[in-house]
Image 1 (spheres, rainbow, N blue to C red):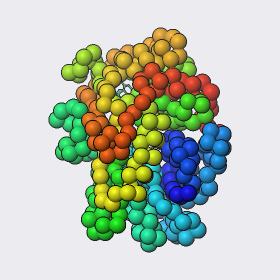
Image 2 (image 1 turned 60 degrees about the vertical axis):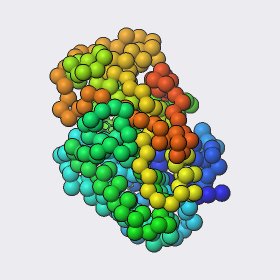
Image 3 (image 1 turned 30 degrees about the vertical axis):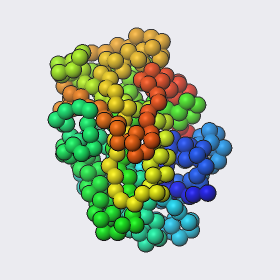
Image 4 (image 1 turned 45 degrees about the horizontal axis):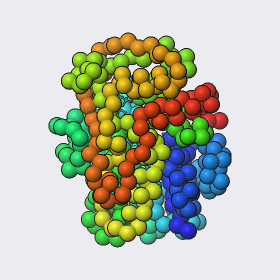
Length: 337
Ligand code: NAD
Ligand code: UD1
């Protein structure tokens, strides 16, 4: 049985990936400092997948703690989710973001190298494409970042590409996620945003449960069919499954690959709102506001490379994503405790 270390494994995408890994027959070890997640996620994973992963409460900045994990476990590959992810916050406290996401990640790569573990799947983001010249976005499009968070993703990609060049035994998959939303079908796992959400679906979920009054739609004068921004929303379980395929690929293919994980379909803000209305069974109020600074008009993935290399394609549609988000929201009014 292959053993996978999942950093950030109690977080939103990490927890769903742990479930899929266990169900695919992998042994899972999680390391997380619980900065943005709860220890109770371990019980939820066990409830769904039947096994409670071994857990280390360790910080990426704790070099010795990382070395200990590799000394105590024979790890075959690492999936690296741990990091800070709030775009606006990264502009306010860039040093904290670079320290956590760059210095912390380097500690992990060093500990892996010292232990001879050279297979890695890294959480990157479509944010590395900046404002793309056209859609759908292919992996060979120009990269460009507009905030420290995005820069930490692009810098990690560059560091990992250099590591692969220096040592042909390394195998790295840089997965560029589009917009992950939704929750596990069981209603046991999902996204628990800190404070008032910035992202669309977590915000709509709070309007739907009455915590927030109305959705503020950031602009309806974009060159898109209904004027509101268009994104490639992807169900978090589809995304998690993409990681299983990526790990499998890493075992057979040394080198470094950049791969989009999206559905290849774009939905506007109003289309998502209407899908959520169907899911929760009532009309949701909204107001059109000015554009949000830094937003782009539209963004969706070319998924050909993921299909060709990984044999992976997203299965869930926007209605599934909204239904699952709503189920999680209703079942967990206080988050995962
Ligand atoms: P999340 O915040 O739910 O999970 C990240 C986990 O990492 C949390 O449990 C947190 O406690 C942990 N963590 C943070 N810093 C740590 C440190 N120094 N040491 C140990 N653990 C630490 O976020 P998520 O949405 O699951 O995202 C996972 C990864 O995917 C992140 O790297 C994120 O940047 C990337 N990503 C997310 C999205 C998205 O929309 N959610 C989109 C693109 C990329
Ligand atoms: C944002 C981040 C991006 C990150 C991604 C996933 C910015 C500028 N970009 O992308 O780096 O990778 O989240 O975490 O923050 N919208 C509203 N009202 C809201 C919230 C959003 O109308 O209250 C609209 C936005 O204008 C956009 C769409 O909904 O058109 C999606 O927004 P969001 O969920 O924040 O994701 P992105 O902007 O794609």
